Amino acid sequence: MIRFKYCFALFSFIFSASAFSADVWSDFVEITEVKGIYHGGLLITTNPMPSPCSGFRFFIGENLVTADGAQLIDGLVMMAMTTDRNISVLYDDSTGSCYARQLKVQK
Image (cartoon, rainbow, N blue to C red; front, side, top):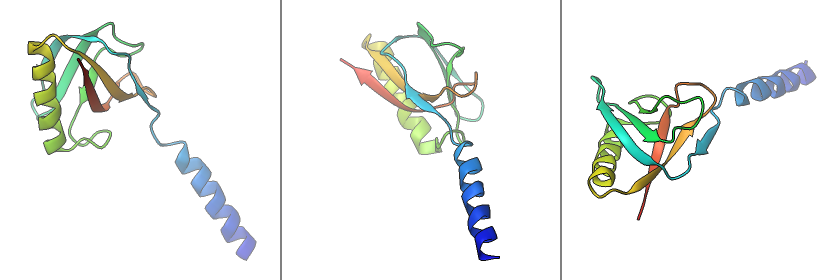
């Protein structure tokens, strides 16, 4: 019975680990468009966009983004756009939705 519990715990861990997102950093890219979403999130389009993304989605509640975090990202994006700086985005590339959670601005 004890072996069964250990085997069950091991298999549960292995299968749950595959459910985690595969976050990767994009190259530094130029922002071409920013859309504010009704729930407080942002949709950022860049040139170029990594495949298969149509935009980086900073949505509250997705990929660890909080309301405070979304406001911080919004400020960084506006600063990057007004000063013509490039950004790099940490996003989940396991789906075409490209939910993002971190952003870097390059001088």
